Length: 251
Image 1: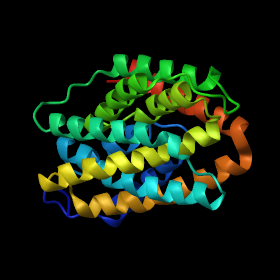
Image 2: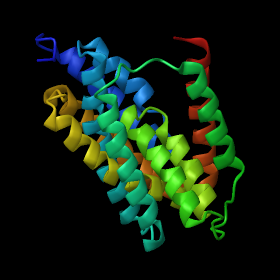
Image 3: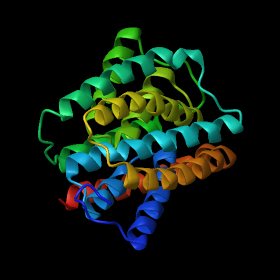
Image 4: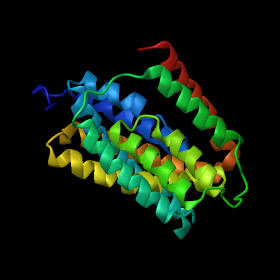
C-alpha cells in the first residue's frame, strides 16, 4: 500500500524494482539515478516529500551493495577519506533537517549546470591517483556543501561527490567511485534516521526499490572494476547527457 492508501499492483512493484535496478547501476558508475526513482515513487501515489524520503532507503541499500561489490574486488577507500566522510555526514544531517521545514522548488536548469560542471571536472581531472589539492579547510567546505545537498534532495549528488573527491584526493575514477559509495553509505544512514524519525518513509515501496537498487549497484561495482576507468568514463558521459537534457528541456 502506498502513502496515498492505494494497494500497489504487481506491475507497479515490477516497475519500481526494474527502475531501482537501473538507478542503482547508474548511481554507482556516475550518478543521477534518483532522477528515475523519484518520479516513479510519485507515480505510484507517494507525495513528493515522502518520495524524497523513501528514496533514501534505496540509496542506502545500493550503497551497501556497491561497497560490497568494490570490496570483493579489493577496492577500498583509505583512511585519508575519513574527514571528508565526517563533513559530508554533518552536511547531510543539516540538509535533511532543512528539507523538512521548506517546500522544495524545482531548479532544473541550475542543477543541469552543476551536473555538467561536476562531470567535466571528473572526466578531465586527475586519473592516476595523484596527491589531492584540497586542504582541510577546503575539504570541510566542499563536503559540507555536497553533504547538505545530498541530505536535502539527493538527485545528482553523485556527480558533485565525484568532482569533490577528484579535486581533494586526485583518485582515478574507479577509486573515486568506491570512495563516493562509502561516503554516500555513511551520510545517507543519518538522513534515513532523520526522515524515519519524522514518519516520512513509506517502507513497502521503499524496500522494493531497494532490492532493485542493490541489484544494479552490485553489478555496476563489479563491472566498473573489471572494465576499468575507460568503461566508467563512457557510462559517465552517457548518464551526464541524459540528466542534462532532462533538466534543461523538461520541467
